[in-house]
Structure formats: structure tokens, C-alpha cells
Image 1 (cartoon, rainbow, N blue to C red):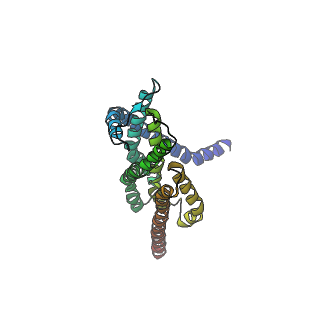
Image 2 (spheres, rainbow, N blue to C red; image 1 turned 60 degrees about the horizontal axis):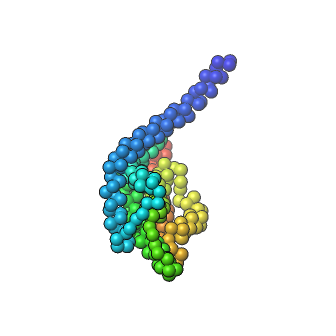
Image 3 (cartoon, rainbow, N blue to C red; image 1 turned 90 degrees about the vertical axis):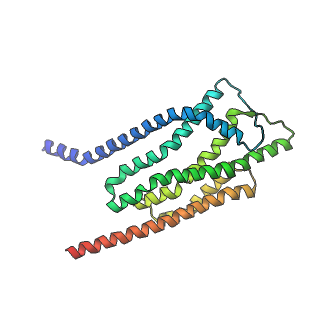
Length: 260
């Protein structure tokens, strides 16, 4: 009896252990690609640094290192950023591969399209945050510094930390429509849940907009409004995907009834 009970428990836990093993394998793959991208990022760090300095919102940006580790730390941050961008599509593919067994053939094809879409949306968010949000925030700080009669001295670490703290959160938020659509396609989210979360989501997005922009209504609106529209677009995509999913389910049920 004990052996039988132990066998039953093992059979119950085996699917869970297999899923955890599969998840661990996918995570290891992502880490390997990230490390490979990090090596490539070390070669791309210098050109990216030169471009960002040359394209700064002010002319003749003069950066200073206040610590012997500033240059090395900044070099590694650039390499990590490049590796992160390169790893996005591969990570999305691994996520798709992990949930693929639970999807039908049509759902597998539909959700596979998110892999290139993830990189495209991240780059759109990167462009919006760099060309719109960052200049507003930077020039505002310049104006305040000048009004106080202070001379601005730019530390290289402080300057790029300020830049990355704006770019990365907004760029990741631009993945929201794809993430919500993906979770709707696999049945985790639905439009009703998103509508219930609307007030909380709006508050979070407005808070992020206020946090990364100068404290004035115009700048806050220029960031918060697109983020809110992004969420509403996500709800619309979720409604379309959920409706299609329900129609397919009804069609399958009708086909099963006809076969019986």
C-alpha cells in the first residue's frame, strides 16, 4: 500500500517537476545569450557612448569622472544595455516555447508573432523616451540650475544614470500592449480584469510620468497621456483577442457536439 501511494504521489508531482525543469532550461538559455550579448556589448559600448555624447541636448557636453571606477562602471552599463536589447527577442521566444505545449496550432502561430514585435515596441519606446522625454527633463534641470546661479558640472556617471533612469522604464512600458495581448491569448488575462484595474493602472502610469519628467503640467502630460493611451490600446487588443478566443472555443464545442 505504501509503495502504491508513493507511486501515485510521484505521478502527480512529475508534471510539475518537468515544468520546473523546462523553465530552468529556458532561463539558462536566456542567461547564456545574455552573456554572449554582453561580450558583444563590450565592443559596441564605445561607439554608443560617442554617439550619445555627440547627440546630447546641449552643445559641447563636457563630462567628468569623479572616481577611478566611473569609466569602467559606465562601460559595463553600456555593455549590459546592448546585451539586454539583443536578448529581448530571444527571451520572448523562450517564453513562447515554454507555454507552446498548452496552445493550439493556431494559437502557436499567432503568439509567435510577439517575438519580433517585442523588440520593435522596445525600440519605439526607446526612441520616444530619448527624443521626447529626456530632452525635456534635461533642459528643465539646466534651466533650474541657471536660475539658481550655479555652474553645471557634469559627472559622467550622474549624467548617464539620469539618462538610463528615464529610458529604461518607459521603453519597458511600451511592451505593455504585447504582454497583455500575449497573456490574453493564453487565457491568463481578459478585458474585464483590465477594466477593473483601469484606475490603478492609470494612477501608476501617471505617477511614472510625473516621476521621470520635470514638475510641470505640460511635460507630465506629454509622457502620462501616451502611457495611458498605451494602456487603453492594450485593453482594446485584449478585447479583440478575447473575443476571437471565445468564438474559437464555441466553434470547437459545436464541432464536438456534431461529432457526438
